[in-house]
Length: 147
Image 1: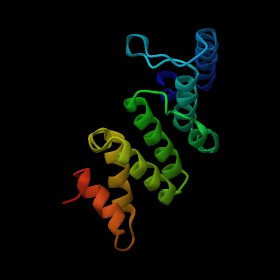
Image 2: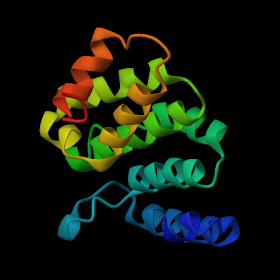
Image 3: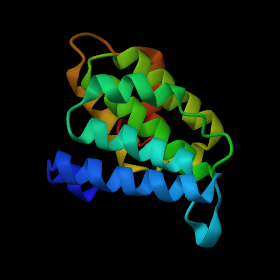
């Protein structure tokens, strides 16, 4: 992620390839020492780094297909938030909101206190030209970004 945040696509790809090889040697998802490492976690990082690098189509194509059911809840929710961020950046706000609402059903406390969900909801509220939907208002209130 650090390489992607520095807009260094080559290093990002190099790290992802190394992680993919390590995950392949591991052979399955595992949570040794709370790492939640394995092929699924590499796929999650592939989505997140694609979004960070501006490759939104890649993030949107890959993100919803990653099956996170076997991972710890924190990783599942974080992935959902990254997918929502990619949808939002692609101006697919309805899809983004649906992903966040699904994540909120899985782990309300994780979504309510995560900076990314709060940032997305606040952005959506601020961009509204008319009255925001009741669903968006409810989400924003639960996230405490709207009174």
